[in-house]
Image (cartoon, rainbow, N blue to C red; front, top):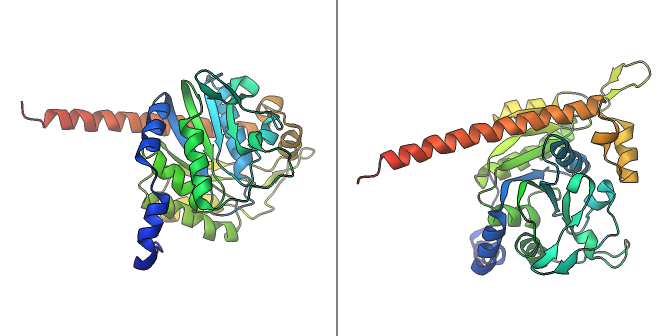
Amino acid sequence: MVVEEDKATKKSTQARTQPYDEGAQRVKLKMAKIKHKIAVISGKGGVGKSTVTANLAMAFATHGYVNSVGILDADITGPCIPKILGIHGQRLQSGPPGIFPVTGHLGMKVVSMDFLLPTEESPVIWRGPLKMKAIQQFLSDIVWGELDFLFIDLPPGTGDEPLSVMQLLPEMDGVVIVTIPSEVSQIVVKKAVTFAKHLNIPIIGVLENMSGFICPKCGEKVDIFKAGGGEKIAKDLAVPYLGKIPIDPEICRDSDRGSPFIIEHSNSPASKAFMDIVKKVEEFLKTRRKLAKVLQSSDEGGVEK
């Protein structure tokens, strides 16, 4: 069951969230140059969603997509993707034909509210409509160019920012849902799965982050936050399971330094887990393309001439 607004507020909510036709058309034109759009979401904070987004995007960049991956940091009030990628403090550059993303490691194209703030202590004190407008402009006014992948890092929950992105990008390839093994996370993250289903957005799969700690000295695994939460969610809700990312202290250290963990520690269990997930996402997209071709052929065959 999905909890929706009552009739008294539904009309005003629709008016507030429905993107302007002109803006939506600009978004469509810009996004047509990007082959795959994937959002990374979670039901709650504290599951390492932004860290997963940054490292997953970096994993794709090292997997044959150099200079062809972008990240939209859609967490308007709490942007942290630039810090993780080592480009914190930079600024978006403008010039013909518009505003350009900041470029990071391996040609990663990044857009974030962080690039627009005067200082790192400056808060963004905005209500929903302003945040929604900012996301629309990030999608429509930025010169993203031609990319193979655009990953969209969304704030926790199912509010303004996730809803805006889903409305503006109805042709999105799908969402990756991040959880941790704890039962508390499972309860809330299930809402994110239902949210995606309710909006008819494909679910690429559930990813379990912080899934056990592997001692670097003895190799013993300790399940700090229990184990199997992501797999259980996927099974209960009949969605794909992408795998688990173990806790690795180097991920935290590299994120603080702005150094690409995937490159610096390519042989670690966590890096290998990210690369396995890359392959599963590619397989999902390949299957989706095949299905689209079959449906297209079926539709064309059914047209009377």
